[in-house]
Image 1 (cartoon, rainbow over the protein chains, first blue to last red):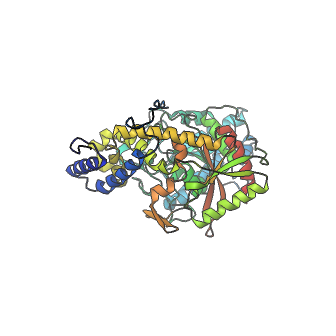
Image 2: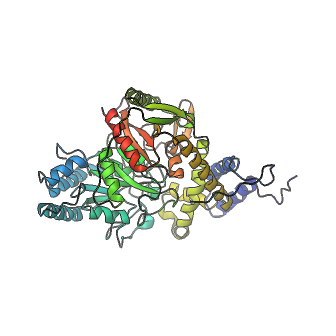
Image 3: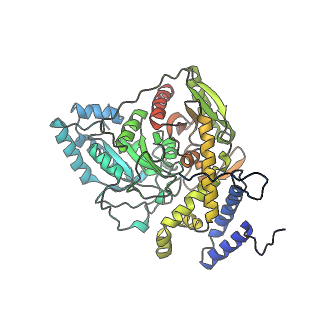
Length: 65
Length: 446
């Protein structure tokens, strides 16, 4: 069971990013950040992501070029 | 324009034989700019005196037998991201007000060595951060064939300058499609070379892993000549159009052909039919991770831009156009772990495209899902699906910025109202891709 107080979820990220944008007077960023959150969710769900908690042995990280 | 000189190739023959002078043709380009640019707005800086001086120098050298090659004396324009010493590089932004380039960009030096004449610096989407060329401190660029439409972007001024006869070629940059998109909608040939083939030193960056510099021209032969000059090749070799019969191309139907304007779909299908009649073999392929190209692109480009612009976003935020400012601000919120995920996604897409290209001579697909869009549009609706306009315009091109494969657009038809449509070819090696594109161009020429 994930302790949401400790978890760094996209929801908490979006909440904090939006609060920061509003603090800086950039209210117009809100819909853009919501769109970015959806994009980040898709990125994180991709099958190329490593997951050490899964059954498969971890692959080596590809070298960045 | 001289009636018998439409391309760089045509013009260079006339210049070499001194049937025309560079001074004369340069003056015609400058006159065209004066006559038409008030309505098109392709240029930020017109280099009239410099261009005339370069043209006179070219004529003297040619007359003395010191012919430098096919670009000698040819008027070209450069996107105003590219440094030309002693002139501003504005990036179409008030943020750069007062900037004057201390030295030439690497590509500028090479073009100067090739004897090209620089007629001016072209308008662009601010900091290359968009696809319509509307967000610019110098106002939007208008499509020369329909002033109510965008010429595409971000190298929109470059494309418009060539289409309108203000230059014989232009140098653009391409981070998500910014050479190919405007080339496609303006009926030009636009080449994004392979990553790293053309130096980006002296070019205002957007993303170090996605930025490319390349030519925007009226023919594949011209693109080849300009590309070789950008590479620093002193004695360019002519294109060698491939024999098309037996060539094998992959057509990535899933995702890339799912959402097209009906006239673009029809033009692409007609082009494929013409190529098939020449003996080309077309095979359906898939790039499985293509639907994730958008998220990968965003998580690479935005944080890089945010890092580059960090100081000026804090010190002079109101000097950005609002749309560009907010997009760069988004990059400040991308987490490092997601940038790493995007780099892993880049590797996955590279594997996908390499697999699709294996044992094939290239990939073929449309360049843009739709023809030139209307200025002011923020979304586009096709076949019952509505998308933000930027996402739509990048859909077919940005994958190959992520993977670094060379890609070229050639004209393949027009809409009923005369708007150009482009076909995109993707390859493994730029020189091979150019030879293939030259053969395709000959088949598709009207």
